Amino acid sequence: GDLEEAFVLTMQAFNLTEKYQIPVIVLVDKYLMEGHATVDYTKMSTNATQFKIDRGNLLDSEALLSDKDYKRYSLTSDGVSPRSLPGQQGGIALSGSDEHDERGLYNEESEIRKAMMQKRFKKVEGILHDISRQEIIGDKDAELMLITFGSTKMPCLDALEYLRREGKKISLLSMTCVDPFPIEQIMPLLSLPAKKLVVEANFSGQLEALLREKTGFVPHDRMRKYDGRPFYAEEIVAKVKDTL
Image 1 (spheres, rainbow, N blue to C red):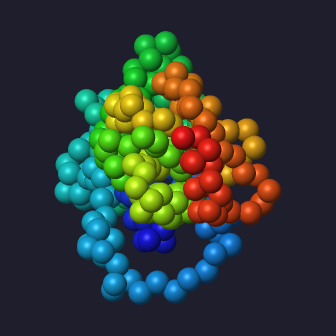
Image 2: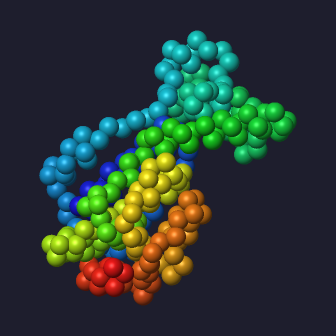
């Protein structure tokens, strides 16, 4: 369930940081971190047990030794520069904190600065292609859609199943990536005719604010909990009925 999904998303994060040479932040919350469980890895789905590690665009030793001008930050069409691994012969490179040229040498000329910034942000298109698809769970013709993220997904799923047994058409959108924001995936889902109820465990409505910033979206209703306790399916069910 949620632990298997957390495992897969964490592995995806490692792949993204290797493939695109970027830092990746995995958001976790109190509910998940204070829980404990024993998980039989062999009983996980093939999505987890057959997960493939992607180290990205690595240069082999032969290529490094034949290249007398190794450009660690070479400008490429996808923004990802081929790289060496620590200790490889011929793979020595600089990594300064200031703006640099393709060799890593300090350079803050305007054209270099622009080229390097454009190079970095070319990675976004590839990242958006590689992240997990944002999908709707439940009824495609739902009268109400729950929108959430993180471990709140699980009580939302319980509430969804309870409400569907009562004959109500309900769906769930659980965000798995918030930056870069997958707007092309999210916009068609937010445009569905169902009423939208944003469920999140914080005071300020962080997810709702992000959705509004990126898409202009305003939900029909919202449910926020910030007393240090997790959501319970029963209270989500009651809120859905009130919203409907």
